[in-house]
Length: 209
Image 1 (cartoon, helix red, strand yellow):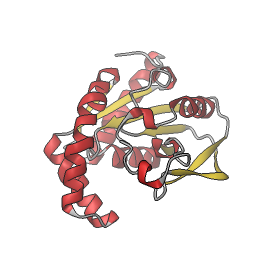
Image 2 (tube, rainbow, N blue to C red):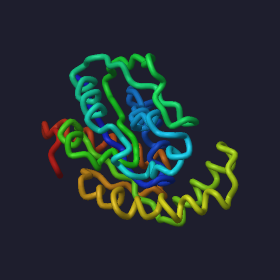
Image 3 (cartoon, rainbow, N blue to C red):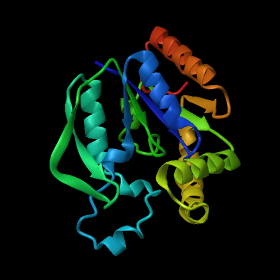
Image 4 (cartoon, rainbow, N blue to C red):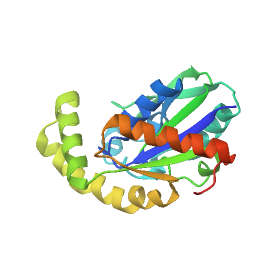
């Protein structure tokens, strides 16, 4: 059996960095939601780019929940491969993900899907000011993804921020632990580890604290 931790938060909140560090410290695996975007190969390329990928409906949540539940039981899964350049799944290919003592499920929608919530042993939401989230996303997209500041700003205003307000921020109500995204990484990791210890001693799972 694996301990499953959800790490959610708005884009740029620091949730990915926290999830990666938790996986390293706990000896677990970082399990991002991104592989579970729905296959859009049935649409023309021009139609695909108009899809709002900041909408939770773009994730195949039923398959995601099935796979997370299997990992929680200690079973290996065949995770889909997703081509972000074409917004399609790589047909005929998957990657094997072996179970680990800890599975860190991370993504903006990690706390949005009702079918996932009971599987988690701990639900974490990383909260950060909108201005900081935007600055981090701007730096990442310009530096790492070769985008222009103008395109990043337009997308943030058009889809990222409105979608966050509609779906992501409200999902913090499903969290057991809300962490300030402006804190130092070591302190955030310590907060999660201490919460895990407390819940282990209490013998709780999937319950609100």
